[in-house]
Length: 511
Image (cartoon, rainbow, N blue to C red; front, side, top):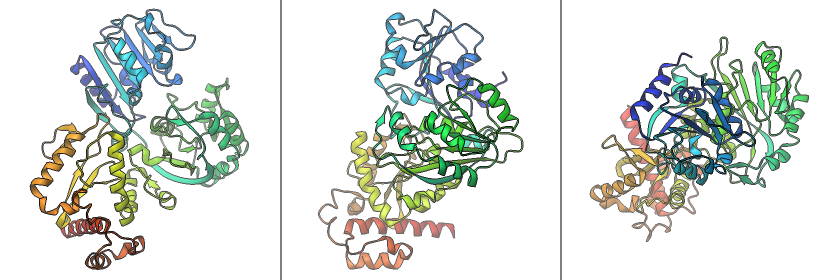
């Protein structure tokens, strides 16, 4: 197989790094499986997968004996062994610590779990290489205790801009489900409860297909029953589940445009080559960034005559749980938006960041964000040193200062690191928070009432002054309906004024 330039580059970087525990971030559709199956082996290789359907998928690329450790399948000294983490954790006694030279961890964002740690600590491999397609957000999981360094990155934006992946046009449609009472298991909605709650949505999903789908369409359903019910409502649609015996024949007919729509249940999440797909409808709600990216990934391949992928998210009520939708592909967070504003997050995927920035650029969200950051710091175990930060949808942190100035700390990657704006090197985000505090004390000590939560405690809850209110009404006219002046505090007013000053300074710079 002829590798793409970036795939070969990744392999070269891994080989050059040699011994250690390394992390590769590569978007779904860019071929991370191709990369790790073509790495040069210096001994036996172990592949760890989180989900059962991924265990067999990479074996077709090897030209040597391969074995499997999962359920009833057991390996027998093969050069390459692909294992389910859930099975291998119970079979570690079968293997010596030095049996594998290289360990590949697929979906490496799960590697912080105890099961992974136990397996990785059992083996004394020369090299451990983790691969993940999840956007680099270190606020959900930190892998700095598992891997030494991120050594290669190619994200979805890079793949689209460099014409390796299809452009994506995003659409949100509320289909009326309510998952408030569905439990979470292993990081996602409990499958049995989800399937039950999604019953009865087939009619509206069929309407979504009729009104918005274009060309060859792939629908992801929540259960076999759900898939069958949806297919009955769509003319010419075919169901594919684990019980479908003629899957290859269906894929062939779909590719030849004899079948307009395939409705599947957890089958086409990985590895199936369906470049013809022009529309993907997500009718299987998920909290898993990886699963969501893999579902969307079935439509990312380029194909002659295919202008772009149309991605349709079927949304509903999920309570306090986050639901993965199109912005998740870029690591963007829309949880601060109310329902009406979330439904406006549509259009070209690569422009969604600008859309979200506009929708979150309101006094109400500026104020709310500061308290949210404090709670985030406590949950993540970070010391913010009493500095008031606003958090942006891309995960970055902003401290507003007088005269429209601000300090920005980038979103932490999965190692919990950020790139220092002063030195350009990667440092732990805790170090960035600590350095920011010292910088503020040296340079803005006379403005503590703006950025220091301790300094503002004495007056923070007092009602905003007449001078503050007058300034806001004069300079923030487009957001007056968003501000309750009867309850506005001095601290809240101060934050709004700092933000207004920053926006005004940006306008002056662009003139």
